Length: 388
Image 1 (cartoon, one colour):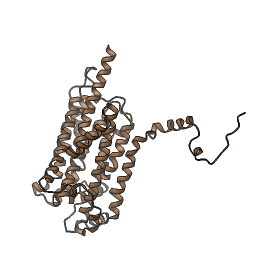
Image 2 (tube, one colour):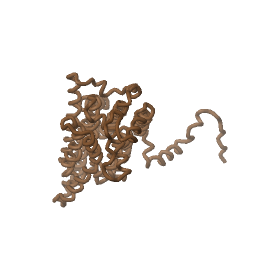
Image 3 (tube, helix red, strand yellow):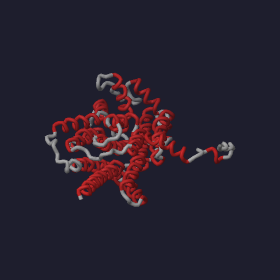
Image 4 (cartoon, helix red, strand yellow):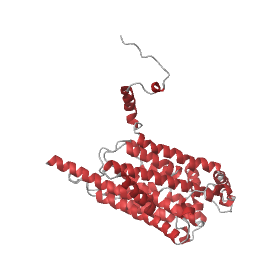
């Protein structure tokens, strides 16, 4: 009969006593993705940016001023605030909060804030395509990706730096068993992105070109919040009307690649040009990069009531963009390093260079376009190996 091990208070006994017990523990956690420490950085990022976006906004006075504006139905400088958009009161209340927040940074009166919003807008309008593409994969392994419009609307409401890391965390843990997308699902996406993503995004930041009234511009901001639903509608209608359904099984996995890469290339162009326009403004002295991108915690605190929401929103968006850059960069790094044998230092340098020169939206879309070609090439190689 074995003698029970003597209990001691030594530090070595604070850990799990046997490797088999520890392995069993990991097996329990594995279905939930909690046994992959490298990916835990994403929920940690989400928690960090929740603090910088929402807690700090409540502490610097911008949140209080936003509530006062909503209650008064106008800004401190007298600018009216529209509060009716859909006729559905709870929805209108949520939209009004978003509109009140975004109006000062999109009306063009403060150049650094407007340029910052241009970068974020082009990135997030492009990011909708990433989410829609992964919702269409035939081997989707979790229901989390079945509702792309919901993800996109949540990003608009809660902040990209809070939601995108959680999306990337789930994405890296739940790889689809089949990567391909049906041709009829992918084919409408380029048109859907141009109509539902690019055009509303441009309308959001071009008020100065059309000399719109404050109310009309606020209505455009509200409309842009429905971009994900517009993209979804165009994609669903286009897919249902697509004439070709009976594809040769040999073309099934490759037929959609041109449409997928085309929409991602549109994203590269749209987001990349927006970022280059910002760099151009900085190069010609129209705005300093530091005033656009570097958060200044004192600005909201010292701002007058008339500028409090502007400075608070700018500070919020600066941290939001930092969160977007960090989370998309890590997502791309993990995807590429796990699909290829590229030197990780070279990969990190390339990603950082792409983020600096072309922005996160263009860089990530370029990586995803490469991923699509890589996945198709792998699938074709497997098919040919089975035929030999």
